[in-house]
Length: 210
Image (tube, rainbow, N blue to C red; front, side, top):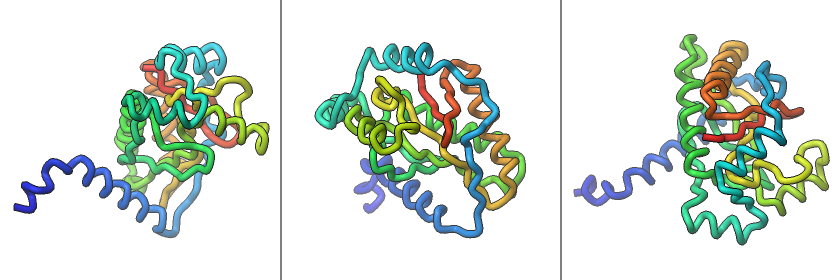
């Protein structure tokens, strides 16, 4: 009887279990924090590739403020980003955990691909940290004022719901193993034309284009 009652809510229950499990992982020690700010990957031009790709992918769906953000959520153009295998999402003060359905799909795909490329058993529970996801232009402006070097001048791809930042890799084993797996996963999806990459001073900026 309980199974019948809970069946319609199975997707929501699974999402909550994943979120709880990922939260528990954060409390496990010891661990090594491996920075992703200097990953050896080709940079896609921000203005001509990232920004143009974001405009094209969303039909110029720029998120000016919270009102526009809520409109896009109600219309299903942005969905709550799902925590899945291979990554964990921080609670960023000036960022919201929403992505376009395609960007969310690609993030899940990246997490699974990353895990599939880890051959070392000791690194099988490694995960990368998403430090920032979607920002309204209003949120972007707050960051520009506080941290001028950490926010793009002009329209940011974060304000289209198709970008996220990878800040670090967390492992209980060798940073190099997980780092190489993440690099390989990002490079593969970049070569497949699914992601654009832009190494930044504190993270790897990723934009989903298709």
